[in-house]
Length: 304
Ligand SMILES: [Zn+2]
Image (tube, rainbow, N blue to C red; front, side, top):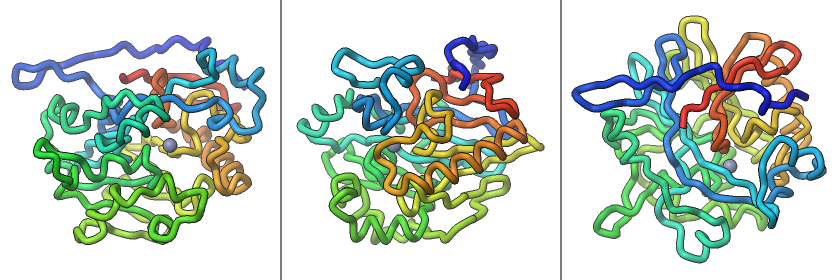
């Protein structure tokens, strides 16, 4: 295992100006451009994020507080292709109550509408919302509280894409998932006509493919992006941070741990062999990285 901290980012942060305002440049992937949006900052216990991995090992790769809490982000990835605007996951949203905010040390800084605006986009410009799965830190922004206090679909025009098995489990959760699959995040979507359930692999738009993985949840899915021969893999909660590169380092939240290890290993080996970017959802430090065939980090992107 390589120590990601020894690599300095070789990529400077560029900014360009559009219509008089400065817009941070995203990660270029062929004709696609990727931006990581603020879906909320929170903290989780080290044991929850690293499962059976001893703290002695993971603490060399990821910081934690005295009470063993890890700084985490939820960073939905906005993908602009020549034809469409896609969003991978939606963050924690703005509906958590005080108790929930306290438990997760949630800063309440979810700001997808504001950050879209900074990119010159509105909520209605998002064509597709890809949901890797329906845990509240990924699907909490599907429905938002508006200025009047009412609930509304955050992306009213978007097709929302979810694996059918995930949706089945959302509607009949078990005792372990019931707290994470929250009705307030899906009731409005249910009757909206904006939900598209898929089974297995699916091409959402040109160069954007869904890959069913299972592992974390039964219906967890990954996303593969490809444009002009450049690729990126978004493995969702199978690869939450730069410290989870070892396929055996999975979270304690994974409901099907052996599936998680097997699928993660397959996808990471394939991605590394084709020089893909691995995009990260929960990492406030590094948002994407590339590996060589040995699994060593050769490039990092810090886009926040
Ligand atoms: Zn997550």
